[in-house]
Image (cartoon, rainbow over all chains, first blue to last red; front, side):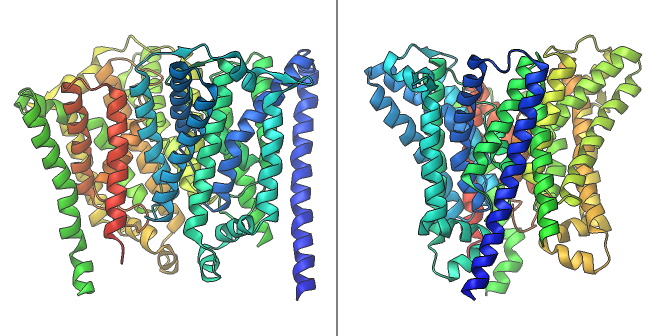
Length: 322
Length: 315
């Protein structure tokens, strides 16, 4: 029994590994293509830029990955980033204390996530519609709060958080590595992480076997919100200004990164490290479009197509596996 | 007891919800300013709501199948651009209208195929097509408005039929048509079953996937008609004009009492929901509340409606 379960687990693991290898190959192919097509691609500046963007996208998508693992979705990530960034910016501006702003950004993000979690876990509202309503509420609040103003000019120490380097590598990359390790350890090696997988694979079965599904859902949505808050701070530190539209057009790429990374929309299958590869692939595509001077208008179109292709592949593999 | 409660649900538990919202809003805005409860302003609200009605009617059917169409606003915008560009290129309003409808129908069928054939969850499939439609809008127009549309198109919005404004006539015809489709045809019965019990539908030999594609195709087609009204209203096509319209449509459906997970829908509720959203926007406009705060209010309204629905449906 245990042996069978172990060997099955081995099979699943090696399949996950195979999927990761396929995706890394895809990323390598894109890299090779871009290196041939553009002289600017293989420059140190551009590579560091790709790394930095990947880190940012990963941070937005990593919390979201856990939400998708529970067969849910968080459409409010971008709007959450917008409000958290603007609140954090005005706190920093008003008090001059960057640490207070950081606490405010992450706290605001986590609170929004908690609200999403309460709607989904307690009221049993389908996550896509609950977070969709939340998204518009937050967008409206952000625009109203900012009233078309821009907040800019933050302390140098805070800006290092987004644009600084340590040993020649952008600081956001270190943040990314930290959360990659944390997320992977949490999901694969802790009881709570395994409960989240179980919850996503079959919520009813998980509940009957004693998983406190409501509390785990709350945790996952709050974590997704907090990660959005953290990402908002890095964006703020990077661009050194905050406007009402700062979080616009960020939700679609974040969802795309998780889905390209192999996390299944139906829950219970996917990894945080897969999302990193997804973020890398998407960043490479966008970077390539920029280098080849393709109009930025094509980006939502490309992201939309990539999402559909990624989910289509997910559907096909699920069908052949079952 | 519980059987009685269940049977009485559609009549008792829903009518009050949206009706109360509407009455509260009317009283509230009526008290705050003299300009709100005038015949001219009420007519204004109704005419301005017509585009939304065209989107919210099929959205009701889509939500009833436990689906969602996030792309409908962007598809409307793309249809409007296709209409404007075709009219300007060919000089023929009819060809323009056909182009707008074709774009809508094409995207609707694509959405339906993604959902019904590839089994992609509707919110993610239409999120993908939303990105595609929005991208196409920007790419085709280069971010610029398309202007120089002949007056024939503009008359669709400003004209009258027997003293009734044309947009109202179009919306009324659309409502009647969707009502007949939903309550008087086999297609309508299938829509109810698609949300409630898809398996039974399949076992009964109804082509369930085809029906589902038809539901999304109807959404696209109505977005095409919406594109005509929108273009006529602005006398131009703008690449960001319809962004967020899907949210107002979904809000109207939610406020109107259609459930997002049990396949229960109520078309008249949606109509009242559209008027409620229109009243809210208009009233806040008169109070000089910025449109950003209006969006936040509608977002809050949706969450409130979902909250009430969730609490009511608790056993």
